[in-house]
Image 1 (cartoon, helix red, strand yellow):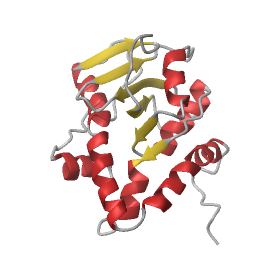
Image 2 (cartoon, helix red, strand yellow; image 1 turned 135 degrees about the vertical axis):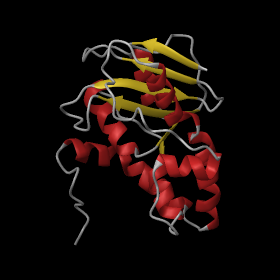
Image 3 (spheres, helix red, strand yellow; image 1 turned 180 degrees about the vertical axis):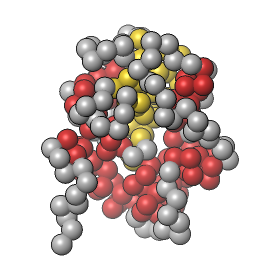
Image 4 (cartoon, one colour; image 1 turned 45 degrees about the horizontal axis):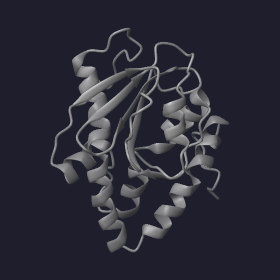
Length: 202
């Protein structure tokens, strides 16, 4: 089931201690393009979508969840969403698991690390991406947009379980956790202009 909320999550919604998170923006420039939608799932097959109508963000319940270090947040390409949350919501996410980073660390037999690839491998589902490049700032989102947005969070718990098996098998769980701890600072670097440069390169 997909539930659409406007401007914030409801006060009484409890998504547990591990939540899949994603977001949609008006474009790919996080300091220019506004945040339009945040998607969340507790891994129970349901998705909760928070739609923002403007750049006036007042979402205390959503922000509280994102900032809570006791809640593990599962994201794919986490640094982009985290930077947007820092810039637009004023929230620094802690306790984050990035499936893109985890995949790169343990699935070294391939260069295919997109969410579509991981959903196919670990959930056996072929995601449709036709609504990826659409108007997320529209007053009313289409059913296809809602389904696309929900699909970005509905399978992250399964991916998390599958990748962790591989990380443990290859002895790379500790380095993965260290990478995840660095992500808030990596997002800050992204916002400061080091989004296309690797400052750790020799």
